[in-house]
Amino acid sequence: MKTMTSRASLAAAAMLAAAWLASPVSAQTQNAPAASTQQAAPPPAASPAPAAVPSATSPAIPTATAPAASSPSAAPAAAKTEAATGVAPAMKELSPWVMFMSADVIVKAVMIGLAFASLMTWTVFIAKSIELSVASAKLRSALKKVAETRSLAEAQMALGAKEGILPSFLAAALREARMSAGLSSDAGIKERAASSFSEIVRAEARRIRIGMGVLATIGSTSPFVGLFGTVWGIMNSFIGISKSQTTNLAVVAPGIAEALLATAIGLVAAIPAVIIYNHFSRVTKGYLELVSRASGAAGRLLSRDLDRSHGSVHSRAAE
Image (cartoon, helix red, strand yellow):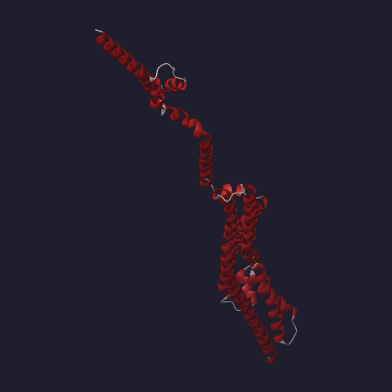
């Protein structure tokens, strides 16, 4: 009887111990913060069974405290990630206008000057194209009109009261013939008329070349002006690197891009200026050849008038 009572007592004690051990584990699985709080409390010293509880539930303690321990080291990494994500959009948003607005004052002045030079280049191109085309058309038309004339007076009547290079030659020839009336030497008259023609040709060459010097200056100096802006911008970039104490490409790239933009604008201004200058040199040479033809036509008409006047004098003397 005593043996059965003792066995029943041991069985009841075992069931109570199992129930007591199972209750903290189920509570831990249902509510982790409550389990960690219960585990932090010291177990009762009377029962030997709770000694196994810390070993069974001890892995939950590092999981609860791990985020707090790793948070100080995670903050710089997160800051670096945010900085990197903040720099990337700025690099993608770089455009010529943004680079111009963020450039140094001197680099801005260089860019504005080069843009103005480019504007002048295209203005000269349009103006000289219209001027040379109109002048060449007028001179060709005048040469066709006087090609079949026999005298200076007839040529003037064919041209009318129009202004131009050929009427200037005809007026100079008539003036010289009138001022040399009574002189017996025709060679002197022709020589003085040729001198007047040369002055008219030189004046016309100077007039038609107006604007060519601007193109030559822009074409030869714009690359060096742009290079000056580039050197200045790169110098400022290196100064910024020394101040920030970093060689990160995100810090260096915007300043270098702004500096290189000055060189690009310089080339944009210089290359068209050189091409347009060479084009106008050829066109101007062709126009001056037409001017020389007009001078020769006026000289031939003057020579015919002189020969005709001497022939009439000789015929009257023979009569």
